[in-house]
Image 1: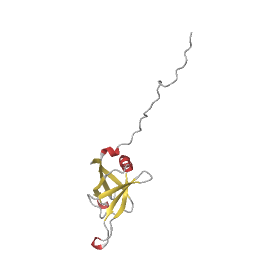
Image 2: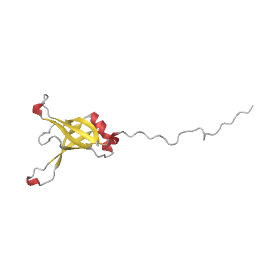
Image 3: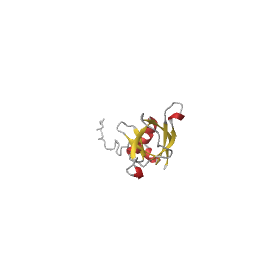
Image 4: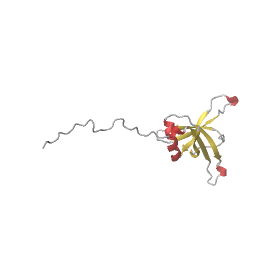
Length: 136
């Protein structure tokens, strides 16, 4: 695995509370029908003694450039490693909004856009009928 995106900002959902999200947490990417990529974080169960299953919580969406980079890999269902690499709480930012950043690792071959396949057979003059010659 090699880094595909070193650091990408997440456009956060309005109702997100960043509590419980920390550095190194695993994130999941999902390609939507409208060609955007949603980022999910796995949160542990709130039940005592570890009962119950963890739940996936939508954190936000990747920006346009990051989506363009990872879309081919998501369409191929490639194995990507996505981690939270930076968390900025709202009270520490100048804008007053929380910020999350992710790093995406995977096989660089998976992000290459498929190119159009060349035609195997091309038009050739070999098989064209020969026009009759005018004899003088």
